[in-house]
Image (cartoon, rainbow, N blue to C red):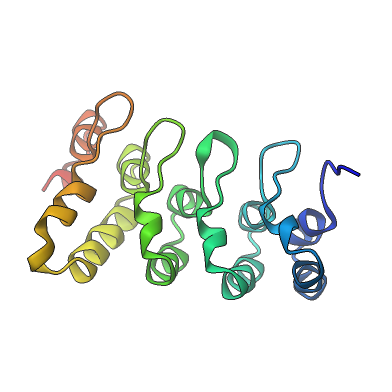
Length: 169
């Protein structure tokens, strides 16, 4: 039987952590299921400002950070859009590979920060990259910073186009 919203979607959107955690233990596949709007439960919890529910989901399965929803957005991309720097830092530390996740438009979280004038999120990501990717791995650091989206824009292009001198400097 298919659901428009699973019970996990409903409990995540309402912030009912206890029920959500019970659902995840009984039916783990629900955590990756998209509802009719293209959102997995973790996205709904975040979009409804239930950060505690999001944190519980991630404590059970860190790979939920990488689940793609509508337009290829992950919960990391939404965290950047909303400027939640605390969750952003936590996600990057828990799941470092999520820095490479691309939206349907080929954008990383860094692109989204530059495009949406989220300087604090941009700064947090760049500082994390500098901390995480040590000097002996400059190729990887360069790859992250110079990724191009589907319109062949790097984060620097987007920052310049949106007149964001803080990002450019």
